[in-house]
Amino acid sequence: MKNVTLGDELTVSALGFGGMALTPVYGEADPAESLATLEHAVDVGVTFLDTANVYGGGSNEELFAKLLKHRRAEVQLATKFGIAGNLGASVREARGDAAYVRTSVEESLTRLGTDFIDLYYVHRRDVRVPIEETVGAMAELVLAGKIRHIGLSEVTADELRDAYAVHPIAAVQSEWSIWSRDVESQVVPAAAELGVGFVPYAPLGRGFLTGTVSSETIGKDDGRHNFPRFTTELLAANESVVETVRAVARQQCEEREGTTPAQIALAWLLAQARCHNLPVVPIPGTRRAARVDENIGALGLVLTSEQLERLNQAADGVVGARSADPRWVSQGRE
Image 1: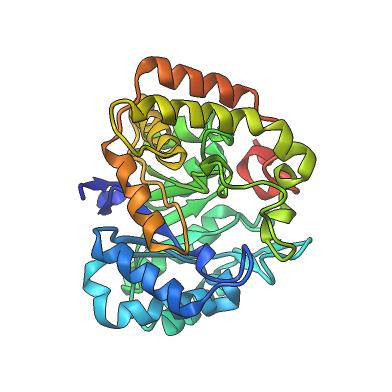
Image 2: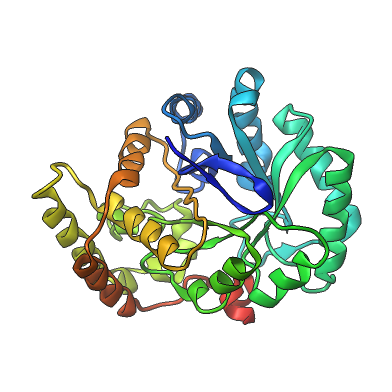
């Protein structure tokens, strides 16, 4: 697999792996299968691994530790801090004070069983604390050798610029996909301007763009119920987007048999990266090793200008907010 260099000279695999789904966020997860999938991802060349202290209340980092114990030198590890409490709670709090930064990194290092983190993200911006304080504390962690690069998640363009003035930023991680394009208006151009890489999370629309998700397939304990677009009404309203993705996949199958909607959605995102002259590394997540292989197949897929235009037009028709709390993501603070 080819590598991509994000900001601050951080080089990672061209496709990453998002670990959130390996813990019970979208329903129950089998720890043995989760670890096997993580191991398989590294076996096939995915070296950029993403977790967070809040996933599974810390159990996600502990799962990653089992791989890191014998494969630390093979991977670039990203984790996050900044969401206090339960990720699935209806009311969530962000924390970014310097003391919390220092406490959080020590807790993550212990759970992960490593003495450094390659990329450490602010998971959500604490608007009560100047971002200069948060990033300043992270810069101290770089000097101490506890982390190597700094990242920001769901920040606005102005917040990115303020943070960058304190310390180089390797990457912005925000939701970006065919049905979540709001970052293209301000955040993506700011990242390109500053030389900061972009790491799209939920690049497959939390599974929706794969064409396998409907209100009938989402279990009662699935965390997607917390997102407005996953109501029965809005899933149905956005079905035309998925049908366009399916149609492009069928068209691609004429030249490359077996092309899937997931691969089309990832290929579209990589085309956007080229359009914006921006290093982009998506981090799709899955519990199944076969899906890892499927996602990697998107790296060699080139969409035609006509196919890209069809997908762009479909994206313009997306309805519904991507977050129940608009200010929890960058779009609500721009």
